[in-house]
Image 1: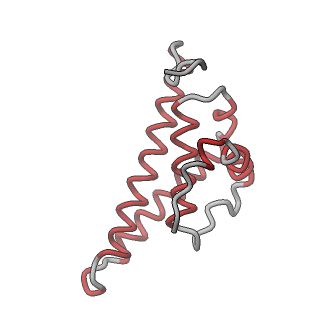
Image 2: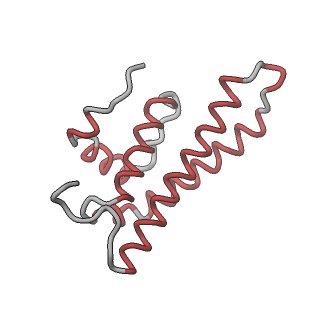
Amino acid sequence: MHDGGPLFPLEPKPRSVALRLQALADGILDAAILRLVEERRRPGEYCRPVWCDRQATAMNRSLDWLEERRSLLDSPLTIDSIAVGCMLGYLDFRYTAQNWREGRDGLAGWYSAFAQRPSMHDTVPVQ
């Protein structure tokens, strides 16, 4: 339905990289949502800080891994860059107090450029 390249690369190695990065972004989102539910939706006596810390640790480790391999996102627009961009936008939306950019200058720079895409501007959620 578009005139660009395929969202899922056809060649085996680029496809494997794209799917792995997409899965990583999905996993970070899973941890972010689990943490959000625990911190904001459960009554205080039922909230388990250990669970929240565990999800935050998983998120940070994954973001650090992605920072170390940020150059993998330099390929043409495919499913991995879309997933990572959406995930980072979600972290900006739901976890503004947790500065995911700190110590991750490469990833932050990549996202700043990616966030300039019209599709990203058009879909920024309203708080």
